[in-house]
Image (cartoon, rainbow, N blue to C red):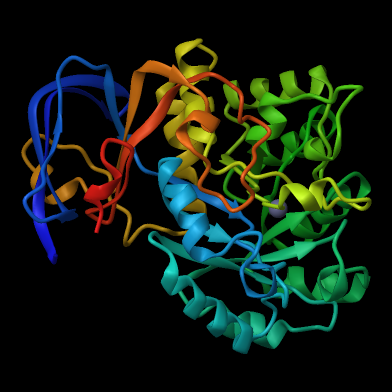
Length: 402
Ligand SMILES: [Zn+2]
């Protein structure tokens, strides 16, 4: 059965359009990748919302020597089921992406992905600036990732001179920095005018350190928070399945992150999707990290329904800002205009705001096969995801996708 241009028809649907919700009747959108003679008809009796497809700036795809944990195919299917249309891979794979040869292997491995994706290139303790500058010419390389805490091998940068060299020469640095390392990277970014993207900012103390610079230089300092820091707090009985870096904070940290969102200080929400198998988490030396790419949309939609966040804020945090910061413009297109809809609407997700269920009931796509949110009963799960005009996920009828 070959690919055929087909139509998605919705008898009645809500559409997020420039901050507002419009209700549209008899919407027809042409999409590819539906099997011949099949049609996707959305009935009017459900509460559907058409929303821009999400962009995840922070994903550990694994693959290579850790493909048992996740690979480009499995992560992209999990992402599509989570309402994502684009994601950026982190370089701490095994082997890490710190040279051009490994980057080209990574790009090749990513051909398996059902979604478009990009890469953060790794800075090495072995001075790989030459490779970094060369890699930056590739428009799929969105930033350079620096690890100042908690990593192994050549990715951990401790040499002050080398660190200064990187900050002097690189345009946009994404950084894993905790505690006093946050002060250090802020100081260097200020000194050299480097754009600094602070990954997974954990809580009150971190936010307070960065806030003045964010307010003073809004286009040079960027703050990412994760879903697990927004929705989970540290508990006395936490086991390895709640272990990640940076660790979970307390209630005050959680409140500070939500406050940061309300005040517009937080730029993006990344999943920091970091899959490990259940047996690895149960082992004597469990690895850090939790999966998150399948649950973020439903968590945020639930937060929206509970009036903790607006759809416009979700749009900025999970679509517009990541696209702008990492220059994911050319291929991404969400522009709802009733007159142009047939040509313009190519990256979107339709979420169901009428029924409540758990990730476990939906079936987990990630090879990790677990989630810290797997038993959470949520409203707002993706029903259909279309990326680049192609149907990439449908829980309506999975057999439809070629
Ligand atoms: Zn990470």
